[in-house]
Image: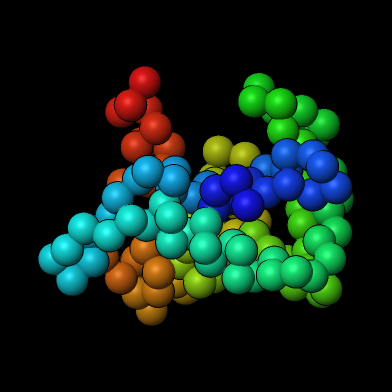
Length: 129
């Protein structure tokens, strides 16, 4: 895993379509304490993928960072949907509304990132440029 929304599949850098996740060094707040949400999100993606075969359907060949943008699955499970449903990523509405329902459910049920406070990854990155 590269981070919480990017991984290596068949030797290629793949960005999961339609989601955004905290960056590796991003911190969040839960129960009044700072926690390394970026690292935990990466671990969550690793737990979903495990050692299983990842199948991806390419949406875009290369984004501005040289990655393939794709929908990826482990078995029948949509990896991006699971990350958002578990509250470990947000729906990236800039590109798709596909995972908005999963995000709303995670927020309502205070799962993952929604159990505390966090800066949306896009805003966090913008503040560091």
